[in-house]
Image (cartoon, rainbow, N blue to C red; front, side):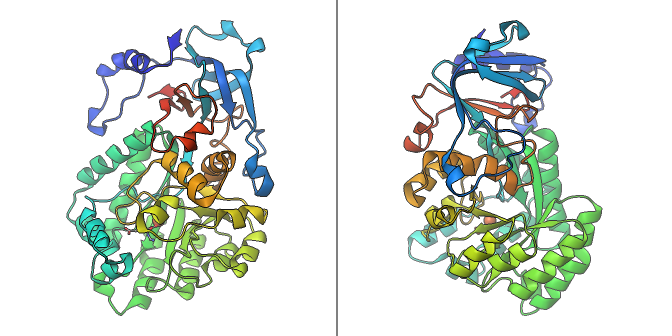
Length: 444
Ligand code: NIG
Ligand code: FE
């Protein structure tokens, strides 16, 4: 039996010394157990039937759990679970004792830009000295600054940098991640970013979804010719991305000074023709009607929503589009937090994601995200965990395989260190309570 401690992690990792691709910096237990049994689980969180694909309104404050439970992993799948009185001790010799620990599904981070080159720490310092995010962007910084850096970075270097970030996220409990392009801003560089995202998905046991975000900013080359760039995105870039099967979704930065409603509609329509559903950036700095448009065009999610009005709320009520809040961005840019209480109290669902990117949220830590959601958006711990797991899975099209403890779903699990209750995850903000992560039945 393995005790769930750091020492155990080392023991389990020893056989890895042989045959592991250290260039990706990712250590997985390849012992190849067919079955692993987790026993004495203090709280087994987020237990759902397979027909629950998201939770909304009052349901968000309900986090179904079993006290003193077991869970059996078979290959990459959750085979079964139950109360300790029924533990099937004969199922396997590979047993992990989870006494005093919480076991829950890994986080589903449905919005990130982790494929980027270098950093923008200089802009961070400029903002501390008084410049705003928009002022820095207007001076050629911001997204265009990242685009320049990306151009000078080889595909391999880009992969190495992103792989390091992804590895850190995985150890912090992220088991599914959406990754956007959008720092290429020309066909060649956008394809480069998307290829890196795809490669991450093949090398890591984290479930990856890719989103084409050619409309992230207007590239220098198209200055004062926005319509031409939008046409280029629709006529050349989207078909090529689709032909090469490099994206699952399409995104637009629908915002004053970036892409307006007409641009957004054009790009989402072009994407839809190639089977790409929308996941759009809206209402970060201004309200220009992007939420209603996104819902009308059956976007999978509308993300940011730091600002929200009555028209946005009623549009959301009429659709299947998941609102997504990005509290790390609000914290980092010192802008309003998404009004989660208004959204949830209206009976709507809400997902939480990191927005991990070099300019507005350089952190991929979902534990921090749920702490911020409680402290600054007044969500309860149960609401925050629902938003970061089952609702996050929905917002990235993975609700049938991830986001809950459900028989038949992927065995992607977090095992915490000893804690009295799951509320300690957001409460002890800044403290890492994650002791072990299991991804697709493999122990990190
Ligand atoms: O989601 N708002 C647009 N895109 C990113 C920021 C990109 C950047 O600053 O590099 C976001 O916040
Ligand atoms: Fe973003």
